[in-house]
Length: 181
Image (cartoon, rainbow, N blue to C red):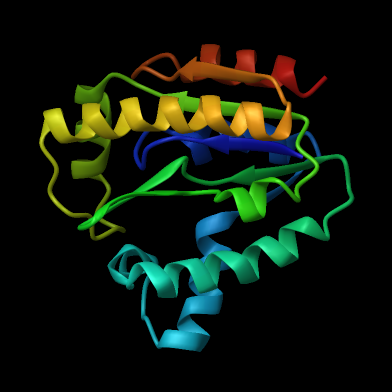
């Protein structure tokens, strides 16, 4: 399994389109969490996930983790977040109890200049996101780098950071495609 992470708006899903076109199974962690949280807690959209209590989020994560740990197909990519910014602080997107059970080949963090992420978020009317300052987004991106390093140590998998600046999508996708070979 390849795990692709980054801030909302960094362009993870857009970069990953190349993998789906190449026959890889792309699973979105947030979508998996939403389906379970909708059933357990009655939430109505993915943006309500981060509003759940930390204990509720952990229950949902554990259920998704069980599902992911059962994946044995090599050509699987997990699209997720390194960390979740909550009102009480950052939660790991992939807690030890989950990532330690996964068969991880490599970790990829997709990031972009903070101004690009802010512009993408404001243009995306399909999501309801909390307002974040450039400083807050930069802090979150820094936290993600720390989590990426920790995840790499836990699962003994190499980690790489891909820059996905505006106007550089093809270059970023090309670098990502090389990781699929």
